[in-house]
Amino acid sequence: MRISSGFNADVMPGYAGTRRLDELRAAEYAHLDEHTYLDYTGSGVAAAAQIRAHAERLAGHCYGNPHSENPTSSASTALVERARRAVLAFFNASPEEYAVVFTQNATGACRLVGEAYPFGRGRRLVLTGDNHNSVNGIREFARARGAEVAHVPVRGPGLRVREAELAAALGGRGGLLAFPAQSNFSGVQHPLDWVGLAHAHGYDVLLDAAAFAPSNRLDLSRVRADFVPVSWYKVFGYPTGVGSLVARREALARLRRPWFAGGTIQAVSALGGWHVLAPDETAFEDGTLNFLSIPDVEFGVHWIEDVGIDLVHRRVACLTSLLLRRLAVLRHADGSPLVRVYGPPDGDRRGGTVAFNVLDRRGAVVDERIVARDTAAAGISVRTGCFCNPGAGEGAFEIPERALRRTANLRTPALDDYLGVLGLPSGGAVRASLGLVSNVADVERLAGFLDAAYADREPDRSGLRPRERC
Ligand SMILES: Cc1ncc(COP(=O)(O)O)c(C=O)c1O
Image (cartoon, rainbow, N blue to C red; front, side, top):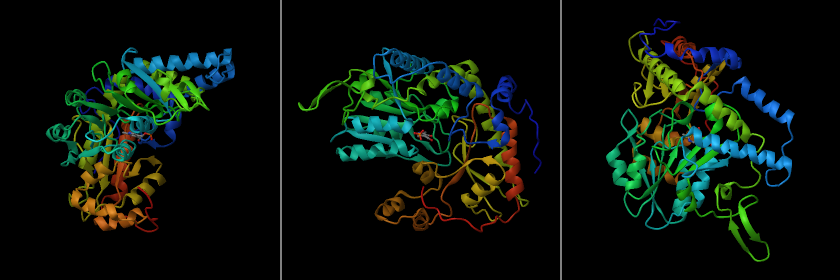
């Protein structure tokens, strides 16, 4: 097939209006030109300005541990508090209603909720099928405390959740609903009004915004989710090691922390055996905060606000539609498709995360390890495997629930054995994801590579290493 190297503004209405991002990429993200980066759902990318700001701040001032009263400590505290305010403003969350807990990442935010949520008999944890494992893991806290765990599967080729099935699962005496605003597997964006639906059924809501926040506006004054985990490196690339749990204060106050630690308490006695947790978000921040990096979150948030999250959204939407169209027309000479996309086939209610597999001439899936090896050799960064999202993969490969239940007793260490039992040809898929400064060339490069590497070719299956883990 012929792949055009340019783009046609008619084909991508709105793209021309995002040209400012090309200038930004040239000025601030020069390191991206070394290869083709298509793993924004894995991590965002950092601007040179962010690194400069970090270096200048640390070289210019002395910052001490914020748990003290001295001047260097107070300087750190002031910057941490500024970062909290910036995060709230980013999500249009009022400081009266919402608090920001700094964590290591989105996973740390999920754990804080899971380990402290008042699960118990008669209460329920409801999970959509396409949650990330960092959300799925909350079920272990729920089970340990006798709560019921309900899964609402993703259905059909679009990998969406049926609202009627979700509403039916929101029964009992209430509990916690957890779902991703955007699936990190399929890019599906679930309706944010499920938050109100769940509230009406007496449920709190954990809205996982890790894959959504980097290229979509989340307005917490309208979508009043109770717990919102986010990882900042996914939004603006740097720093790693800082995430947030943005939480409604009222919901936060209902959590019961299983322990206390330095930084979390108002008063404690070692010999008396009692403690009183701090009355605010600091009750959830164990030990010394990452006080040298948290100020970079303030810088990053302002950076994205200056660029404009709606501009980023528009560009990602244009490029996602382009990528889907390019993948859909890739063919072998006999007209058979070269690629099978999992999830929505067009730009409707989805983000810039596209999961697919390459198909050979017989229509069989090309092992994703081959694609991982070949794309890596070509300097293209995509994600391969199951992306920590087993439920979406189970939906994509249409594995019957009965077969999955049978595997619960399997005690084999290797993922390959598990796939063998399920009769699956492959361990997962390939994921290309778009973000802040993606461009047409990135999309064309991937489509062109897939065409050149696999159309009417026998993939080289030699030398693949066993899959050891998901
Ligand atoms: C939707 C979603 N939730 C949670 C996470 C976990 O993020 P982290 O590994 O930064 O804790 C990810 C990471 O890919 C994600 O995409």
